[in-house]
Image (tube, rainbow, N blue to C red):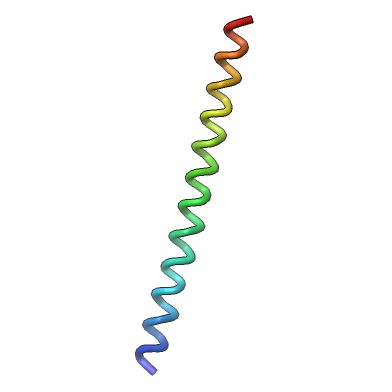
Length: 44
């Protein structure tokens, strides 16, 4: 019984970590896109 609880706890931690990482990478992508648009605007 203890092993099952530990397994589910580890699984929950892994899923939350993965979701947090995806959100962070998505935010970095938006920042890079905004920087690219600013460079494009400045060159015109």
